[in-house]
Amino acid sequence: MKMKFDICKNYDEMSKHAAKIFADLIKEKPNAVLGLATGSTPEGMYDELSGAELDFSSIKTVNLDEYYPISPYNENSYRYFMNKHLFSRVNVKIENTYVPNGSAADPEKECKEYDELIEKLGGIDLQVLGIGPNGHIGFNEPGSELFSNTHVTALTESTIAANSRFFDNISDVPTKALTMGMSSILSAKKIVLLISGKVKHNALKALLNDKITPNVPATFLKLHRDVTVICDTDAYNG
Ligand code: PGA
Image (cartoon, rainbow, N blue to C red; front, side, top):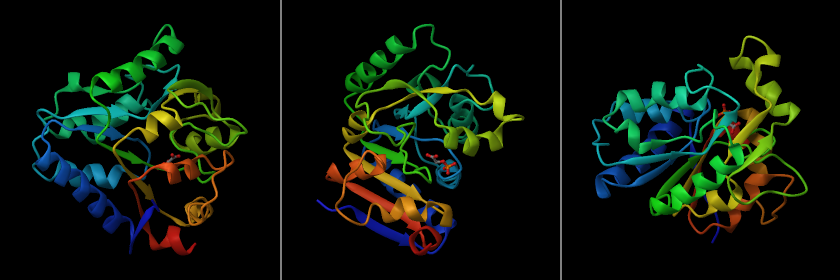
């Protein structure tokens, strides 16, 4: 099954289109399990969802990744990001929102339990993803091997550099992360991949053919039967 590409004229249109896919699911399945992501890309979508008067009271959410080690109260933690951009703005029950625990004493155990949790919830109905300029998904960075399940990983220098814009100092960026692996991600029933901006053009181009390579982890999404890439013209045309 080929990936579907929806090309939007700009970031705003992309965000609205993605939000509608989530809104439609929430209306159709009020107890859906939503797979969520952080980063600049989905912020507009979360704004749309927050303003849409949807009922999140039975919704469960599972986030893709988290820095390690990091406190959930640290403003740069992905837990903090989610609380700020979505959870505090809708009527989701905070105990139904899951983000890998960046302060877990035993990170390997946390990862194993995270996959078990996703399974116990009945799997992810709809997963939103961003993509790195290098084609990473979550913290699944380019490499000769990819881990399939949720795991602890070292951040690459390029990701540390890209994410340092949020920190006072590059040395403050955590050097590790807990991330869902490609097979945890591929087990979602439906996937929406958001791609915005010229800086993501090369990553997007790698999705337009049928080649799958660990050098561009996002190409593994070609194995999934229901992926919609929602991009803006800047990302598509470069
Ligand atoms: P961004 O990050 O949305 O901030 O560009 C996406 C990613 O690196 O996965």
